Length: 395
Image (cartoon, rainbow, N blue to C red; front, side):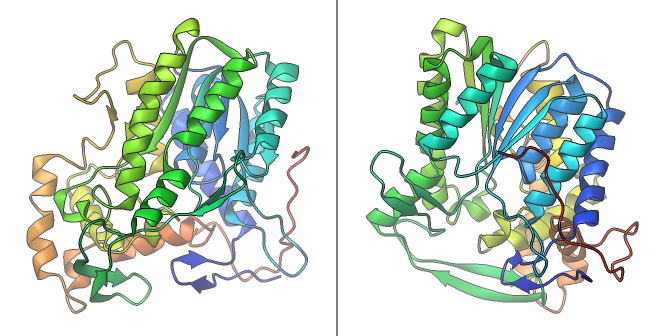
């Protein structure tokens, strides 16, 4: 099969196995270049196949020699269709981890379910005994509640009032205006059920009850705040309501972890091109402008650079600085005054005609396609290859 990118809206429906492997190798090389850290040794990553979850798994494994268990929900390939990018990413990670003599175990299934929780606990007991770190990085649009059986669907909407602002079709480069109607109370509740902290709490409670948490255990989940420009659609929108719940969950989890002297953290991260962020109106245009400014200042980071700082300079440093709400902030460079001061003037002026001079739209597009294994110079995309790549021993 000759594999080329095929897009539908904000997703790419194909993925390239060799390109995904190059992408994973680049991240491994970056972490190895930073030197080893005295970090976690037995890590569970829930949502391990893309974005911050994958980067965290790489940082733990290749930064501190950690044994890792990764949970994800990805599709393998058939003769006629490629696997999802997360499947290829995991296959590449697993291969490189085992070549380096690192323990790697993979579970493909619904992380919201009791079945996957129980299976994970059994594997931890059998192979690792206990874990000292859990990274919670799920980014799913829906969740079937394991107790009620109800399926909740999340929405990306403002709350209270309709919201109108600029947005972009990052494929065509067309800047337009979008109006989004506010979410109903049921939609807010459903989004919190999917993207809030309830499942994170359920995971930690299940692991604690099973006795598989090491003394001094840490767990981290990810959030975003961003500038006022995006608050209506993010921080003050349905996603923001879910993130408020996530932060409250971190406090509840910490209270549950007293017996093992454990701690739960929320890490507020930088705006980046991910499959999830590409779906949010307004945000791709903001990120395109942000990229231009941060690259000009030498401050640009991707997921792996953020994960490196999270582990080496925050979670496993000699001193961990938290903000007034008790959160880790690795969005600090994005939110610097000199960075944000450049956003608003560009935002006010930006149009389809000047998009390339006022933003780094090409950088956004490049990062988007790299998520799916496309755009790497090392790969000849005209080659006829098999889309089928195995993950040995995947559960």
